[in-house]
Image (cartoon, rainbow over all chains, first blue to last red; front, side, top):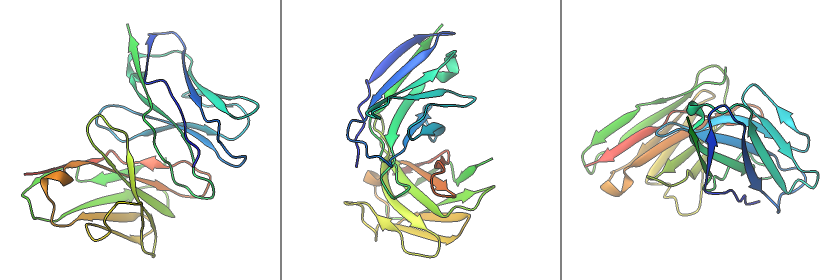
Length: 110
Length: 115
């Protein structure tokens, strides 16, 4: 199973873009990268996922490097409600399983 | 869309009792449901994968006789913690997925406290 590496914590000023990096150097060609976030005492919330191309939705953008060994989640205008633990996960090949790592604790400050 | 409901939200019970947690996909049919456990300040740990109409697949180290999973329909899976003890106290979270390559959607979790 491809493992991911994320910084344990990051800070971001409200209104600024939050760029959360993730390394997944052992990813296989058909494995998707998923991003979820978890606000305290709630279930994880799906943000975005991608395979090769960059993706954008109403919540965030996902930038995947050409070699697919790393990616960046971008929250374009962070708000206080974006304070959460963000998980970058490589979905296990040929299954729907997600193996959560330790994630990045993002703190958005006023 | 893609709402997963989990019930109850929290439960407190005496040691030795069994506790059932329900996970429902409200607006889609879930071919697969997953059960996770999360201890304080730790990440989610996958316990088992549940497919409708078949036996659940448990992750290594998870006791199948302790954590009974039933996935009787495409919208409902249940987790029963049998003869619960204080060390089973945790945050239990389910998720559901419809078509393959679609994201898992999570319930809001059940906080279980065993006295």
